[in-house]
Image (cartoon, rainbow, N blue to C red; front, side, top):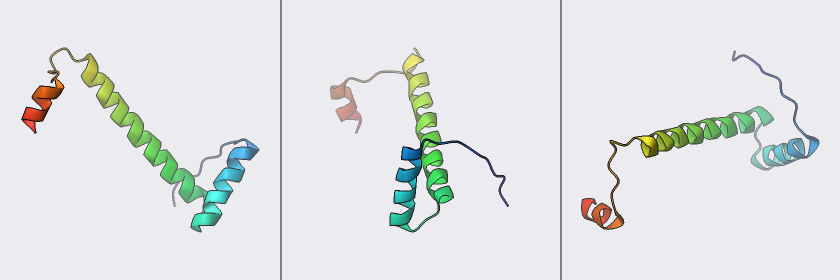
Length: 70
C-alpha cells in the first residue's frame, strides 16, 4: 500500500474536487494524484526550458531557420 499524506484545503476547493470526483466517478485521491503528477511534469518541463534559456551554448534559431530545419 502507498504511504498516506494529509493536507488541509479550503472548502471551495474541496467542493470543486468533489464535483469533479462525482462527475468522473473517481475518488478524491485519484483526482489529486493525477493533478499532482501533471503539475510535477509541467514544473520539470518548465525547469528544462528555463535551463535551456540560460544556456549560452544552446543555439537560438530564428523562425526562418526553424522552418528550414523542419
